[in-house]
Length: 431
Ligand code: H79
Image 1 (cartoon, rainbow, N blue to C red):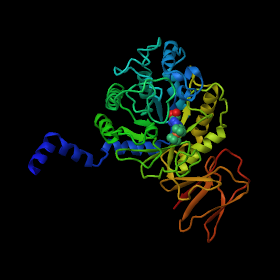
Image 2: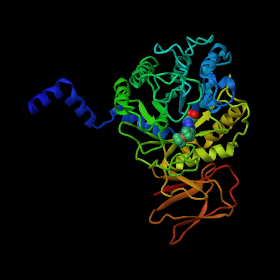
Image 3: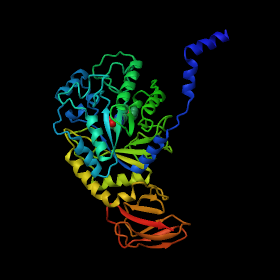
Image 4: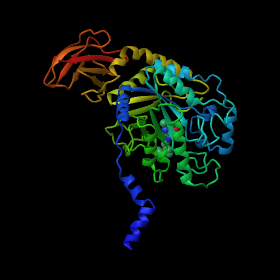
């Protein structure tokens, strides 16, 4: 009897799949190099763009407004963004000091922004525009030396085989039926296209697992596929948990690592993987006509510096309508100007020895510590650092020496005046 059982197990492939499931993921050499690149890169651009952008009410409009899904599909008939210029978008990112772009290849509405054979519901087949947006972005990224990451939604509010439904998108008139296995195969086939047809992809940014946390997502198998096609491709999944096996970076939506201001990160224990925080410039990801509530350039720079000081990249979002909103363009230019001077104090650094403080953060590289003073209403600042030998302490921007005293508690900086710049950076060089 036992023999028969073992033979059956062997024949059914039970043992081999059992062994596979037990295998631990070992990142490839390219993957480890890319993780290092990612940690150094510090700043990227998120782009949320799809047929929802035409309704100008954010990327969740289908579900938030309980639109009829069949009617929603007709938006594609009118998608003709005549101003789209991948080169200009990538250049705007580059000029802002960004090193990579993460573009929504397919958001929760299920519409693919690339030429896919897996569904006609895509930008080439279903719209008069007929252009493969990802192909154009990939070419522009290659030309300008930025890496392209692809956002890929696990949720799909369009396909019948995204079934059983999750907690979202339930009132859009869809027929409740379909086979989950088909959906998994569809995603594999699309990921294969994305990782085969567009050259080297920096990473896949998954989102939506939380819609059905108990579903059989077969993530390890999906991740293995991604890594088999492009071993260097970094996988991140916005599941708001500590990273799962097979992931290469960890993201925090609208929060710095360790904070939970947005309310999504309560279970997101910080891992040792490279970290990324994503944030909107106004309040929404996809274009929203009512949202001109842009943060100030100063606030955005503080977010970027805060991310670096917490060992994370900032992935800053732009939500184009037909083109980049004016507010984003202005901010990107201003951030770019600032980065020309101060980029050196962020790129390639790691969180400094002084952890996040009410007055700001620190970053470090080689024998230098950059003290980023963001909010200080006095001229003295005590850095709780003892036992290090100082070679020099100076204002970063013009190298003017800064007075300081060594005390039992640490190094007491004595500034000439209360800092008024966006980020008053002091450079400490250790002996
Ligand atoms: O692509 C952008 C958003 O469309 C997507 N992620 C960013 C990058 C996003 N989807 N949802 N959210 C962000 C927040 C959603 C929160 C909720 Fe829920 C979904 C509230 C209820 C359902 C997840 C599950 C959080 C609480 C329960």
